[in-house]
Image (tube, rainbow, N blue to C red; front, side):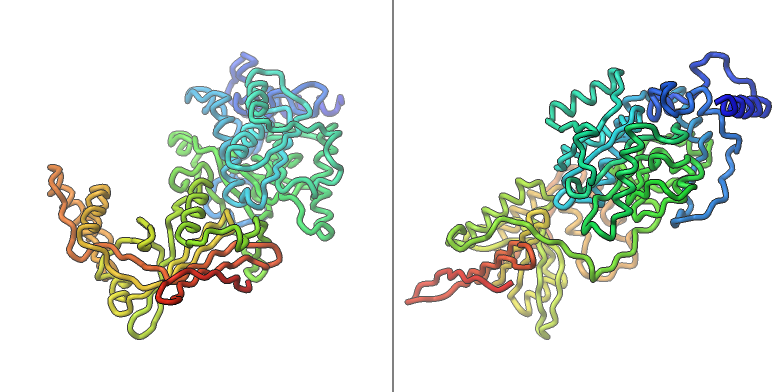
Length: 533
């Protein structure tokens, strides 16, 4: 112990000799984010470096350390321990962020990263292992969001923090009936009970060997990877910011630590992330202000749209031939479906909408021209009833041209989370001009102008041409006057003569019920047949 203290004192003194004078207040000796988000309880009996040392021990300055690259890092910046601590000081100091704000953003980033790769339909059972500091707090927040995303999280939180921020998170999770599991109640082999394990144990303030009970928990995570050749499907491991037990800069330098499948770096990746060899590296924490990025010359990927996470590096290469899903669904039986296929479609469509699927009305439309050359594209269903299924388009487009030459088509709806498909075939006709007018003027004005601008399927010299004409028409109709419908724009209606309802089942023994329209004694009616999968 004396040698350790002597080494720490020497390193700290050496740093003081190289650095400008530091404030004398103990509160300013450590990074607020580092203290609050990664080691809120650096207790003497735990092997944490205390806050006053942890933010000032690194003497390597701001240079990027030369270590082997285990993944394609591109132009992304990787932070030293000292850089990460000082950025957190800035965020929590002059920029006015609070602990709970950053924890909420971090936890949401972790949850959205998991949802990007591991869908709840296949990876619903999530165990979040939380440490005593704010890395554990990030895990608690992530578990709450995962619950709302449709997962079934459980939490192992053996060393609870008594501060109100943490007790509030525990209360919130309790109100959602998210179970807390003790270490003793966890199975020795975690492979049968969970699909995803979130490693939110230690952050970058941790040093030394993990102590009980975390040493045992880390051992169990490592054993999952050691037994990978034995277990048919082991849980995937997701580490928050730093895999627990790794050195913040040198990574798993002894080679015996956790090897997560996903790493979610927060704010910016730490140097140890260069040694991450897993398939999924995401960046989360969309809160870095421009002045911080400029000061530290941070090169970070752009976040897409409104996403709270962004992938770092290239997606992993996959063996396409090995990609498969073993569907588990309720049986689709002849005596349980509607006799009218339109009513059965209505039932399934409503269930798809209720499940929260995006663009439930999206469908693949397949057409052929006079030369019997097929083509397909995605369009949006805009109405259906006993008379048929309606969509709208430019009559001079490729699909419009095909349908004028061969007025028959096939529709395909695919609702992935429900393991369902619906195929519909039949002749196609144009709907009345009045119906097209009514729908056209129900659309947003921008969409009406877009229909005029786009000579669909024709060649344009550049995107600017579309934007220029769009701006001109926007100005022209800025007075709120009626925007005329183009004569070459309108709706089609497919009149079905065949439906097929497909429900995915285990071992590829899928349910397929086909409705065929047949004439009998001068009357047409629907006949149901089961097809082989």
